Length: 358
Image (cartoon, rainbow, N blue to C red; front, side):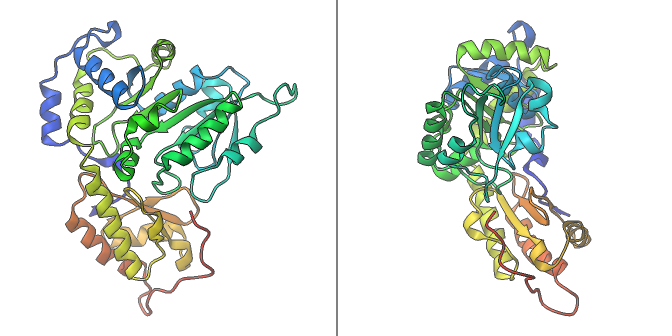
């Protein structure tokens, strides 16, 4: 079975497991775990911030960020397919009492004008005060899209001109940095808070970080306890994060190359893949254009020994490359996917008009 569902499926490598087994640990809640402290100091520098806090999950990290940047009854703006809106169970409303306003885009990247138009008029007693703009880089729902640094800075500048706080969901920020050649710190220092997930392309079994100013991270540590994220001898898992940042960042380029090869192979087979949007480790496959529902397509693929997952848009599937996916797996997928999705008695034909770009 060739499993391309998600980079969250990455298995810890032998080197990472060895680092975990040999980790020096202490009581993390008392700030006595040296490995956790090492990871937090490394991450703060990596993300261009003063301080970082180690957490169990990236969802918790995003929700803590929103909590410390707002007051109940405020409003957060994010792209409609953003992880904080689609996949965090209404967390902004539940944990921070935030109203949520979605910006509609084709690919996950919005503009300064989008922000200006979305902000509620200051002083309007009938509207929630707009307080936060949330960015996501790379953008999962947009198919692993990378924010160009200049464009991101323009949007952040517009938000700050409106006295808004800005948060970066950097779950796959290292993919963005490797693909663009921009330092993660150059992205991260633009924001009030930044999060980084360790359990996706970086290959850790769990873990995430939130980074920001010393003052905000004091609040983040309190929220960590309040949200149930405080741990004890957490250095065992923090060691995986230290190992990942030392060994698994540059190799993300291999995942991107594999995704590019997969996209090219599927496009050459006549499948609806937009190669211009294969920027990192995602390949989006619009099976709706083949006249297939996503559920049907997933079942056909499974029967051929390939696992894909659902993307944010209806009847679009995604293939996600990662450390465990080899070039041989990619060639096998290029052979099996068109066979799975083709009719038994005719070649692949695209149904309907060309799709709106993701």
